Length: 176
Image 1 (tube, rainbow, N blue to C red):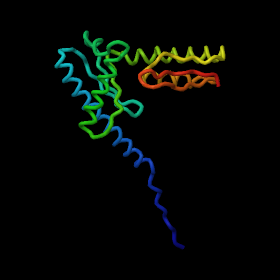
Image 2 (spheres, one colour):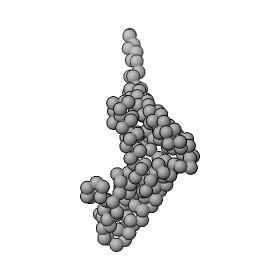
Image 3 (spheres, rainbow, N blue to C red):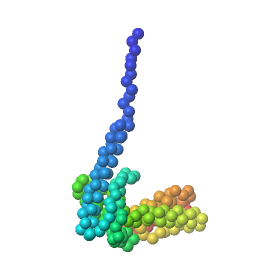
Image 4 (tube, helix red, strand yellow):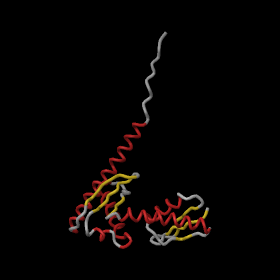
């Protein structure tokens, strides 16, 4: 009587792991390139700041904290920060050849804004749920609209949509 020994099937996960590793490696590289670019910019401006690099939710995240002049890099309602983020993304793209989705935060402004907008989205959704009347919010950046949409989506009985053209695109919250 002969026995057949069957070798265990090769796990599928290592391929996924190596794919994740190469994706994460690209994101780490994006962060490094962005960090170098921003460090040179801070030196040119003679601003102090500590640069922190991270990978979150499938994107490189770069934060600049600790300097007295950093508020100037945020600007009115984050306009300078948005422009600086776009320039940093272009610097990364020029180096890698790949469009970057890098997120830049300066002096904790985006993190603070995220908390404010999450609360605004939740409160607006609850108001719409109670009144049944749709609410149009003021024009917002794509970053701001995404946070509002996520906050509204967490509440049953309401939904949100974006309407209008940039730079006047806004979120409208409806009762479902």
